[in-house]
Image (tube, rainbow, N blue to C red):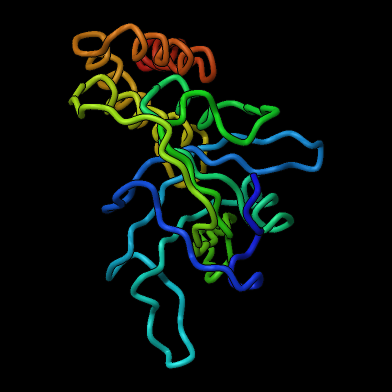
Length: 228
């Protein structure tokens, strides 16, 4: 990437986001680790609005135009945001990329993934934190530095894709204190059925990667046998 780590410090103008943000937009972020590789992880990008930015300005009001994201615990993204001050947020339509980023340690040589339709380099500044049990949840304000749209698509709706993305959320919460494992396993079974009925080859392959990363089918089967 060629942009400065912090555009304000460099005196440059703030770049624009390459896509329209609304609600929480699911993305993949790459951040540079101490080993010189870029770690890919799932990241929900919160659009500006009443529930978007949590930053308190000098006047005590939340900044209305803040785009934010959250990290949960001591993750690689948290570490790299802290040490590097940012990363590259990417918008992708390949469910396999989401699964690899959400459920595995996925490190690559280049900051922009081949499957990215658009990317934006961001400066990340921690603006709030809170604790839930033993987990610290940090909120980061994301300021765009440089961006590119690599390809455009005609929008299509595939329930299998949506189910795969939701499944990565459920799978990532397995064995996390505060979440009921049996409920999560039932959700995964429902999402798997949706993918089987509505998904295409990419969605089915992506779900196979969820199976391999979590072993949820065996766990659910074993739980059922134990209950009987």
